[in-house]
Image 1 (cartoon, rainbow, N blue to C red):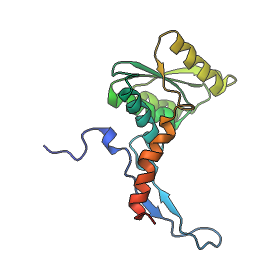
Image 2: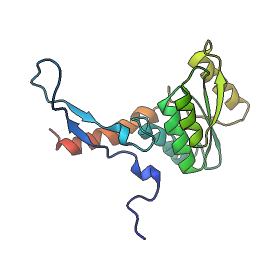
Image 3: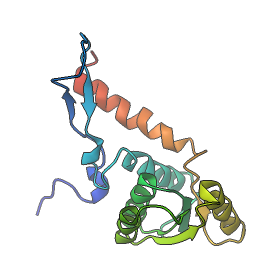
Image 4: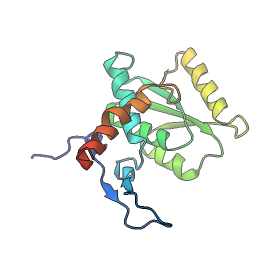
Length: 169
């Protein structure tokens, strides 16, 4: 059997680029919309999530079977849960306890373990806990907020894709 895609990871990217037909107000500009919701975990965050894990692997910083830890409140956590599941990692996501039930459900559907911090501690508290857990040897923090592989994903993937889809114009 020949499959178009070998894994879900192969479905990340190559999202449609469409021209907006109508906009409120007057404009002579052409507005294009990149449909990143077509990525498997449903957002623009699929690219950086996969990039952060793949590039850390290439540097020898992580290996399948390791535990990854990340502070999140939303789409990056969902995308990391998906990417970790694809690549064989245990994923621990730390989030404020006021995060939406829908996001939590999506993360656990991919197999992530969730740890809550108080809404008063917020993302800063989640990040602090992630760093403490890493210091205790409980896993490795990807740190989406300071990880250069996060924006690099758009430089190496989204940008060239848009260039190709527009013919460079």
